[in-house]
Length: 178
Image (cartoon, rainbow, N blue to C red):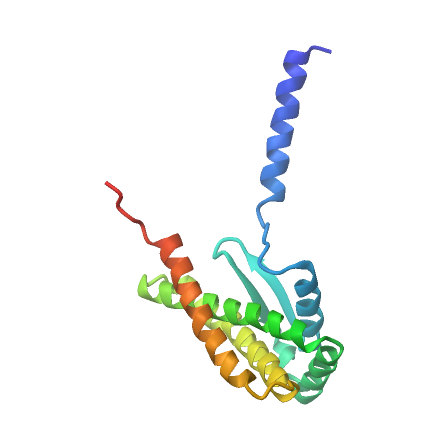
């Protein structure tokens, strides 16, 4: 077979394959964190995903997610009981980060008057994330042996907010270097 024809075809197929498989590539959560997220979200009848257009991880709820809330919250807690408290604290920091990132995106879309994205985040992604975040934090606060953790949590939230702010300044704001 003629290598002048075969080589460009192989190169083209490789490039197409790379383009297809990297569209939704997302490394925000580790494999272990994804397992925790999927198990706990499932108990609340929530789903989890990544939106490549908005570039954000999200939780979403279904209409039936609002039924049997007490039972679902107990199931949520029972999944968390299986996990080490330090693992949960680290996972909670990621959820805090995601919460702040989602809030930042919402506010940014509101400022830019990009109502399609703002309303979508506000109505569909933020409420389940907010509920999930509150349940997780309440569980950790109730089942934590560290009496100072509440103060530490406030510090974590403040530091993470600064980190997110700087991240989006670097990412979104254009700097004139000329």
